[in-house]
Image (cartoon, rainbow, N blue to C red):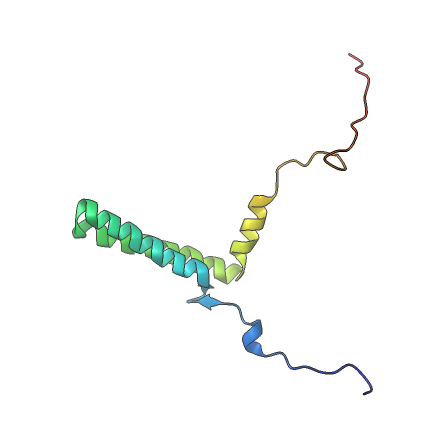
Length: 106
């Protein structure tokens, strides 16, 4: 017992959850969106329009998701965090802090 115990870390725990080069959730969502839009167009306009529209939307979404996965395998989480940030944070310490009275020199 000279040092810290060594524990193995398996590679399967470190690998990103990707399918076809993109994030797993986004790939499955793009398939779901493409099939849903294709089914809706097939019901409204017939299979000659619905199937190609659904395939085109699926392929376009897969292209975008694969490019996102090549850039960063967790880019969707980064974008979600980016959209939560506000454009302006007021210079106050707390919500219930006392705002000092300032003279108006106009």
